[in-house]
Length: 212
Image (cartoon, rainbow, N blue to C red; front, side, top):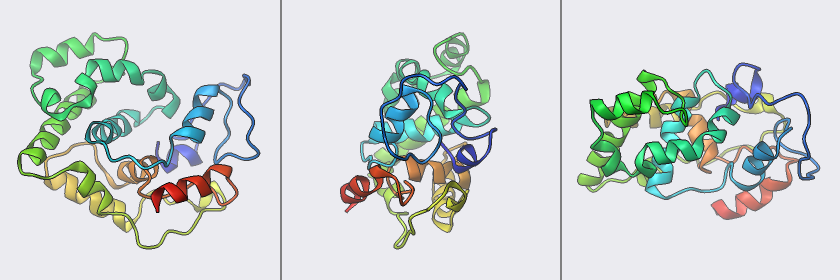
């Protein structure tokens, strides 16, 4: 989920206007009106991720989110996992034209040809990294900034940073698609490479400890 999503109606977690019962928390980093988004914020966003399949999943799903709300992607995440072989790079790398057509008919995912094809390209790029003895974990976490000030409001969160631009460049060099600097900053936020929970957010301190 990228920062433009957080800052504008076109990109933030766009959620229904009718509130449902959401777990209590004194402050969250963005307006939360559904249990799904509350759980994502409280239990997942910003927590360190090092597993290769989960990192590839994040790369792919951040690309799929372009033009959509993150809640749409979360609601379909299990469908994506089933459709894309659990985001295991070597299995995804074996997908071909028939798989693209199959996925275009799958209502459990976002059916966009360019994004589907990019997901397969990214599976192949990740598998090629593994063959060379590289990991996504090493490449992504190598771009952890030395200093990162806690944002006090959504407007303090950048759309991209020098580190996200460098990560985008490194992944593109390795053959990845849909990995621009803004998308990569959203990835860095999601997997804990940066901790962008607001200074007043109750989750921030716990996540900072996990990143230590």
